[in-house]
Length: 169
Image (cartoon, rainbow, N blue to C red):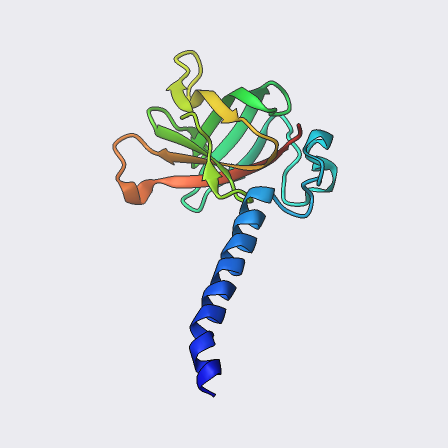
């Protein structure tokens, strides 16, 4: 009995170590659709959480702002830097002067993108914003969160949507 009691802390420590190693491997490995051979490429054909890109695709946030992804260069979004054009509307009217921010995130890896996207209003088109440096630098599923706060609005007025794209190797 004393021998079991003395070895219990070592067993618990070993179990915690193995659990941590397994969790770390899963976080870096991507998921079941990540191939065992890294040179084989990420298999986006079996990814079920992403969306098919279509020019003009739109989503409406909980606060009623419509986020329309007018275009992506390259099309569809691809590995590396992407440039997007977004149009924002609220209650049917173009949303000018909004504070727009973009965050790229890989849910399977638990990390953000390494470059900050930059949003600039397009002076020629009301409610249109040009987004540079939408960087999806590695293959896999990316979640791109777009937030918008209307001009003069408070943090409570901020609305957001998430676009999900799979980036192949």
